[in-house]
Length: 357
Image (cartoon, rainbow, N blue to C red; front, side):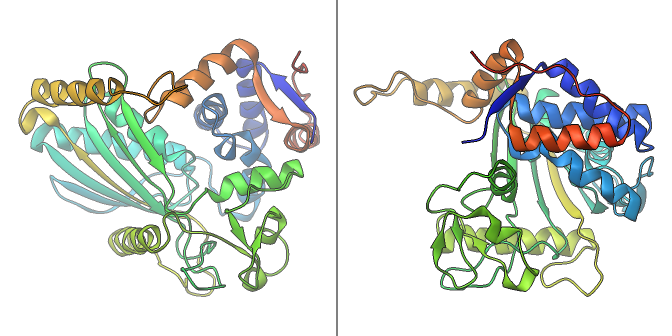
């Protein structure tokens, strides 16, 4: 097993931001993207954390990511917006989309928006949580423009769709309740983390190119795309069916592509978001009351021997965040070495690390 080190969250965020700024990203965007990535690490979602930086920076050179890109509106009414992210950073353009939708929701009670040609949006739950933290309810889903194909249909051996995640966030009387899941058994980024760390994946995640079970994460990243292995869909036909419908909604409404993408199509995210204001429906008081009543009921059920508490969506992330804020962000040696090499190549010295006791 690779050695683990820990980095203080603030130092890691400054290091990440400095790498982006040295690559020509405006400081406001660099800080936002760095904070989002480290925020994913803090919550235990390392697949959407700083492991992505060495993969983001080359995209700035090829034009597949554009620093300082504006949000270009293609179509807009009082209840919807269809916009082109123009290859801008996903974190930047998602923040802008949410701000625009919130204005519409405040007026109408419901609004929906899409983005096409958007940079990787990071942890999808971040955006559902942001909406819920503002007292609204939100649903967000993305596809990969038909380019990244990593999930085979049940019975198939060839990847056909991406992991097509969906996140839903609602306000409660306490913290927002957020569900963030991929429609595959695991996010592609988690396979990437195992690959970078030199660790095998758990059984039940992957199939090799012949459709046989494997624990080797390299099947997802080695060789030409047409000969790579695949990730299993969540729940077999049910998860794959959900993935298909989400892909069509996102690609079809945004103006992006579903698989197979046309030759030369950019491997960007396309986004679909729906936002509701509970106050315009049965009222915020009713919404929060019902949410809290249900959560209290579920947490209060009889538990099996040895089960201390009923865990709901977000519980583990909050616990992990408290621990990592206190003890530092854990990173495997492979990820850290990649970050250090990237930083030093830009003339930036990495922050001090420590090994866990």
